[in-house]
Length: 354
Image 1 (cartoon, rainbow, N blue to C red):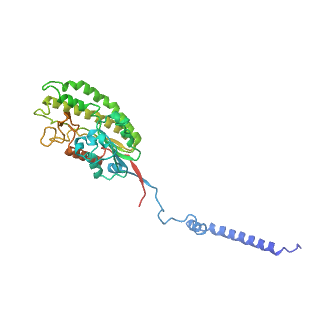
Image 2: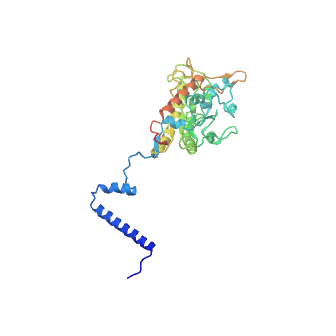
Image 3: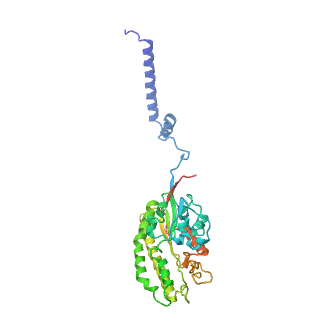
């Protein structure tokens, strides 16, 4: 007869025997349970496979396409360009200094820029750096010892406006040549070939400007403003020593300049859209914007020839917009901001369900 086991070992054997018996019992019981019972049993015993009755705690953010206005307002507004943007036409009437260099660049509070800034609230504020006399090359290189205008544009910029090209074409000198010519001579229209060549060369420099601006602000809307027709569509009399023929020729050169700049901008935007990229390049055709208010009309939106009698010089505001003209430009720009580039913007922001 084997010796009796110690009490501890005996207790352990009894526990193992009970566990084995329980396991066998459970196995036998499960073998005869209906199938639908197993998930409930797993949920009750193991807390696994229990049905979900509550909603998910959170959802992944969704990409929401921005409207043209939302894109424009999402950052800062930077206004660049030449005298048609700086406010040259009303500069002498302006007594408020705007920022550094405003005196040499003839930046005026009467320009369209402050009006656009009032019409929309830009998240990053407004910077006004248009400069009278600027060419497309000077947008990239600078004027009067100031930094290049394009350097004012950064990744935080959401809207850029500018007018450019008139000085590349030499319009100021062209008009001077037309005005000071001997009456009834053809000195005005004789400039056709030279002006046409300069306008065509503008394509390359305009493209450089757009590329530079986009490189600095790849998600921004770039809005380029064209130039208004300076004389009536069908002039009937001489104005400032310009014959009807001269006026028609200047109108035609303005149209040609606008079409050239507009085509470069349109091609650039098509490339942006083709890649599904954010931002845009948009052209505002202002050619007919002053219809009924051209030079020589009863209420012109452009200054005619302004001469400083004491100094016997032509005032720079000649053939630049009046206060009404800049207000008309502001209308065109604000409408363009609302309308967008005529296609969907590819700017998105992440939004979570509220």
